[in-house]
Image 1 (cartoon, rainbow, N blue to C red):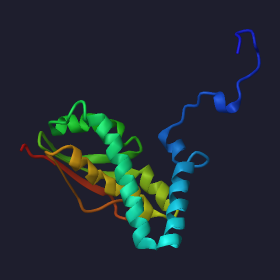
Image 2: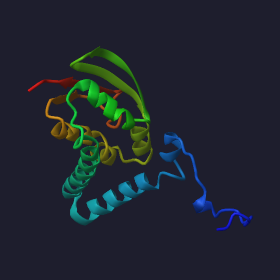
Image 3: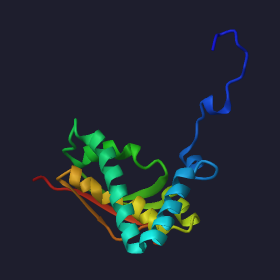
Length: 169
């Protein structure tokens, strides 16, 4: 396109700035709707148990691949480094810190766009497999990292109660 051309760009060529909340809701939530529809189709084809295994493994592979790109050249060696890395991870959450020491952080997530979106889609079971359960995959990439969580918003609880800890080996 030459600089004298006054033809406006086509809509798909325009740069768009979306908030995370906008991305998670219509009309942009196609990836999430797609995951749910695919999951429900898998359930019909192979049964819920096998479908859940496939969904869980696929999500695990995707999340592990994502986190490997953030850790393989610069392994995480402390809880502080872990939180510096995951600051990119949860733009759609709100919560409050309950405890914070160099080797332990306890916080409660009280609002989560992932949980809200999958619940609105009538699929918190899929959301748990696709998003929440995958937090535990981080433990395989960071040997000193530990996680305890007994509640999730996705499963209808009042918060996600995270306790992250670091144990030197």
